Amino acid sequence: MNKPMTIDAHAHISVSREALDGAWSSLDTLPENLLEQMDIGNISKAVLLPIDPFLPTKWVQDAFDEYPDRFIPFFSFDYSGSEQQIISRIEELDSTGVFKGAKLHPRLQSIDLGDTKLTRICTHIASFGYPILMDCLPYGPQLLKDTLPLRYEPLLKAVPHGNFILAHAGGIRFMDMMLMARTNPNVWIDTSRIIDYFANSPFSDQVLFALEKIGADKIIFGSDFPETSPAKSYTLLEEFLDPSKVLSDNRSKIMNKNILSLLKR
Ligand SMILES: [Zn+2]
Image 1 (cartoon, rainbow, N blue to C red):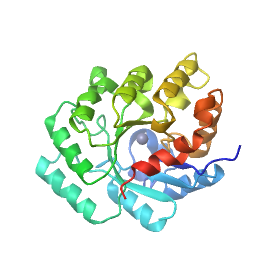
Image 2 (spheres, rainbow, N blue to C red):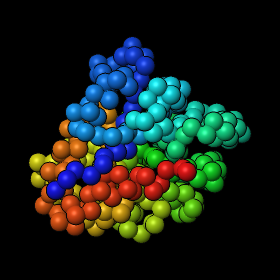
Image 3 (cartoon, helix red, strand yellow):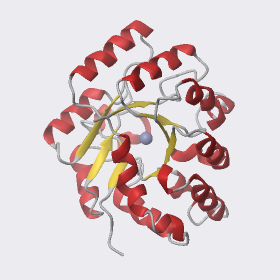
Image 4 (cartoon, rainbow, N blue to C red):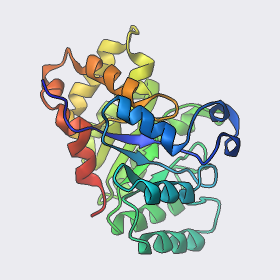
């Protein structure tokens, strides 16, 4: 079977190694490093996700300016600001006409998922027509119960016209994610981390079962570069989906159509 046109819908870049603290400081994270890995995997485009203030939106905008044919820019904002500051910032970002979606990272940006400020901000973002990609991987130093997929559900229901991509498919709680994606029409999931983590594990059949139930219309390929190379992540996903005829037959939805249908026009 021919390979469908492929978009990696989850990648991060930086301007230099020195600009990053922690785990990523030892990785090659420049836009050129990402492009090299995309070329190895014959991957056409990548969605660039900032996480302000750690991975500033400016870096994404600059990379897009340099490689407009290869990158799809999302925006982020400093969530520690007041609601009015954030709304103004979103309007300023929207006026550039550059961005195709928004990224929120509740764990890294200390976002309380139960906060009505978040509901109002997401309502505003959605009213501009942007999809909202949110990290959804229980992990980190805070209480794990506050990072579980079901904690996102009130927000999904409160912003029914918002299209949410929940990254990493809920990690170890992939069955909760299956239920959420099946019962909330405005939820999509991306495959970053979850495939790397569970491939060749005792849980791989269960993850494939959950993905089949979520359905090819709701699954989006992502690598989480620099955590994983897009080329490697693509190959792993192809192998992972192989036993599922229904998912393999609809690979073009997973590899490009779903994300393209969600981007702001
Ligand atoms: Zn990520």
